[in-house]
Length: 345
Ligand SMILES: [Zn+2]
Image 1 (cartoon, helix red, strand yellow):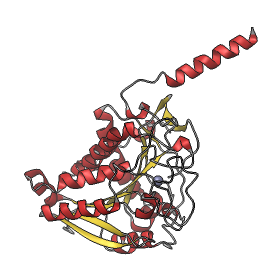
Image 2: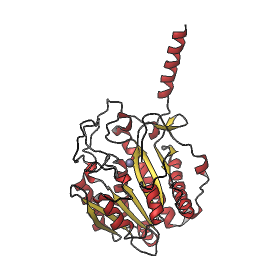
Image 3: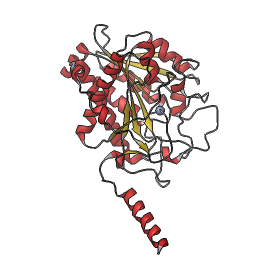
Image 4: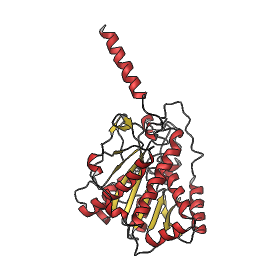
């Protein structure tokens, strides 16, 4: 009798794990070892450079600058839409971790949209500078690294660290790697950046309220960061959170992050007084741990989540409505919990 009760309980628990509402990307299809993961539909390094150059040729307001090279000698571009020092500047940083790819696809979509010389974009360029570093880690993005990736579930098509196996998002104090050196010397110290979103992808098994999330966000939490910078960071988060929530398909939790200044969220806010937001999207393309990996079926939603949230930030900075954003939601935002392995920004 006792055995049956336990079996029934396990059965009910198992059912409840899968009885998640359909339609939300946070609850969308997961990688369960039976979904093929492919990298060839994603933008290659060569195509990424060609795409941003094309955007610069098309647009009166876009310029591309090569800020440096990766360990393996790949060019790292900075895309600048608008470049008026009197206007506020936001920087979208993507793919410090090479296996976190959908956010870069989202950034390329936004760049393409901004390359249209329409009225909205002409007005935007008068009010805001929008910068992108749309793939800081091009070597990790294609798995061209100096170490073995044979333990990765998708065969090593991409990996987190750079070619030297260094986590770039732990290198913001030392700047020992060419990628972080280029970002700091040729972007963060070369321009007056007001806002920065550090985009990542987290594991596929984080949730709030019993549901898997489509992403998570967090402001700088190092106690040395200027309180005014923290408030601006919370406003940036508010604008992006609202944009995703309004569309109905996203579910965002609060990221449970540390206070170390070696990571961009804290380090850049501390060192440069930049309002920073960590924005994690759900699931990665490849990893040695299957819990981190998400199959292709959610890609479209994740790209949309990226596009919607970036555009909301751009518009709110351009019309200054970001300064009135309600930051009290942060007090209620539930901290996500790990329904799988731990993950780090
Ligand atoms: Zn990451």
